[in-house]
Length: 292
Image 1 (tube, rainbow, N blue to C red):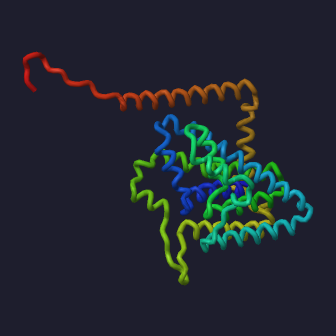
Image 2 (image 1 turned 45 degrees about the vertical axis):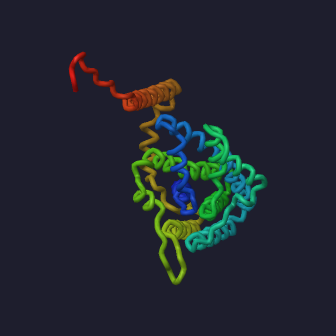
Image 3 (image 1 turned 30 degrees about the horizontal axis):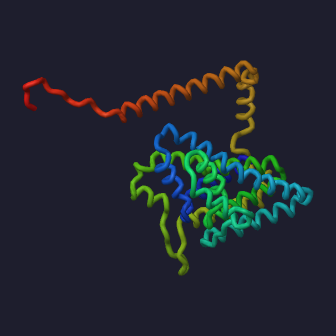
């Protein structure tokens, strides 16, 4: 399951960096969110918009997989084949837009271009999670992986992690957008190259190869079941034993309060520093009768 979560997170990040305009989102945030203090709330609202559309899709894919979970061999074979096919399509630049299959999505997409503030950010998240010609195969691969889990809960978690994979780099890029410059942004967008007479793009080609490798890995490890855990079992046991004291509700509440106070302190210091930088310098006054 750890590999599935990492893949979903990486898929969200690659969907954000896809060459079909998704990289415009950091620029939008950098231009519309007027202060860094407001960037985090907007990122959280954007993630809520993503979750509204992505998590139900993941739960639906998990429900579909649960219907055939009794035929696990067939489910693993179909999932692996679809992943390899989607990876090949994406590597060759043959994308598709999954949002066209949803009724009423065009009206939602039009609303994302209007309004302001948190409302627009929320709608933009609801649209940006599934729209995009280049991001279609990536989202399709994550949905296919979610279906292969055969569990509605795990499928919903995968799509939630996919959304987090979009939000984290989006927030970071928006925070440093103006410092990147044209050269840095062009590097993020990747570049085109020619392979066997066909024009391809580095981002989509590498992403497609990753999806293909995931499909092969899914087949070879019986749906990621026989894949070794990224964290050794002995290490997990030590962590569980050392964190036994955290099960006390008093300790948990105290930890939440301390983290909340720490976050408020960091926000207060950053806001105070920003205000100092924005304050105009005091004018220099000369004594009467003196020339500068």
